Length: 86
Image 1: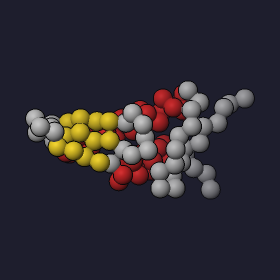
Image 2 (image 1 turned 180 degrees about the vertical axis):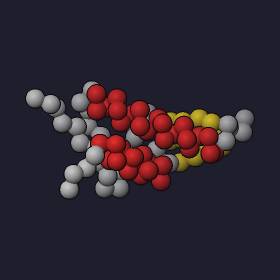
Image 3 (image 1 turned 135 degrees about the vertical axis):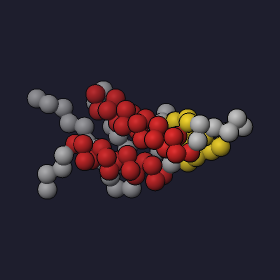
Image 4 (image 1 turned 90 degrees about the horizontal axis):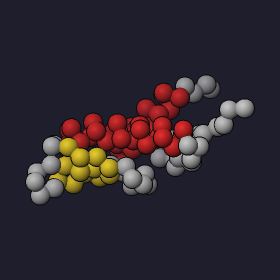
C-alpha cells in the first residue's frame, strides 16, 4: 500500500494529540506536552487553542527531524520513516 507523506504525518499528529497531557497553569493558560516526544511543548490561553498549537508543534518537530535525518519514535504503531535520497 502506498502511503503518502502528508497522510502519515497527519496520522502521527493525531496520535500525538491523543497522548497529550494538558496542564492548567497558575495564570489560567494551558500547557501541553506529549510523552515520548522530547521538546514538544505548546502554550495557549485555553485548552482548545493550546491543542491547535500542539498540533503545529508536533508537525514542525517531525519535519525538523526528517530534515536532519534523525529518527522519529513510533506513536501507538504509527511511525515516520526517514530515508535518504540517493
